[in-house]
Amino acid sequence: MRCLRPSTLSLHLILCKPPSSSSTAIMAAIAKTATTTAPTRIARAAVAQLRSTNDKRSNLLNIAKCAGWAKRDGARMLFLPECLGFMGDSAQHTLDNADPPIGDLLLEEESTCSQKFLTTMTPFRKALADTIESHAGASLGNNNAAMGESESDNRYDDAMSFASIIEELRFIARESKLWISGGGVHTTAAVGVAPGDERRIYNTHVIIDDEGQIRAHYHKIHLFDVSIPGKVKLRESWTTLRGDKLVVCDSPIGKLGLSICYDLRFSEMYVDLVQGMGAEVLLVPSAFTVTTGRAHWHALLKARAIESQCYVLAAAQVGQHNEKRQSYGHSIGEVSTA
Figure 1 (cartoon, one colour):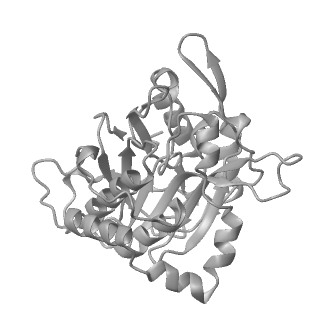
Figure 2: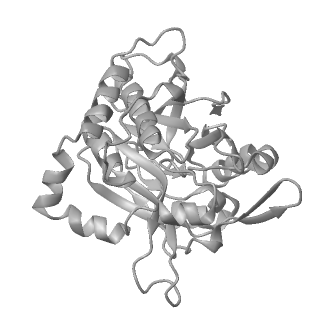
């Protein structure tokens, strides 16, 4: 097990060996001491730790930094936490800032206009591209396992427009030539899905390939409703609809089993992903609260790795997002040794 503890923008490098046809488990090694002489069958993954806020542009620039670091060190795929592009300070704030319905994005993706839009270089995308390039060329320094940097140095013009979190994430993937696991983006539910005329969202995990195409998406099934007197009170179900489908997806590091945060507490889900659907790497992007993180984060990730006998990647949010919300951090790469 390796985890990130610093309360800063950080990246964690992991080596993953996709299984052969005779193997059902992922073999993994931490890339802290890895060199370019590693066998070509080894795929390098990068697990990010973010402190997202309500500033979408700044959040996306931080992701671009992580993409640059990952590209610099030869990673094939970048894993991002839940709420990667926006962390609101109220339920209404989250609703008002949700991305368009994922179904609309998938329909647009098939059109020629969408492909042209993906390659269009807006001023903000120029800032993203420059950030990727500058961080891809940065020196490793003395720490090649967890690269940290302040989020406060992001510079952009407030007038710079951008499409949506997922669309700009697609651009980052295409520009950096990385596959990206977007571990949690709030997407608006299509009209007629929610009861009556209620406006609701999904908590959506997207997998994007290195050409910027959406390969898979998963709507969070187990919603986080919790009340711990004097510590934390959150009801995700006030704004969010639950998903109803398990999702696996092929990738450069193996077949991914998608989940989000609170799903982690429901072991049967991961049994189905691994034994029923062939998942080889379980993804648990999260924004665990400090209280629940201290109590259960490490234990639950270890349990899922041991039960499934495969690898677990858990990109996490960390630190103080706003007056109401603080996350535990400790992004982890977990592999069963049982």
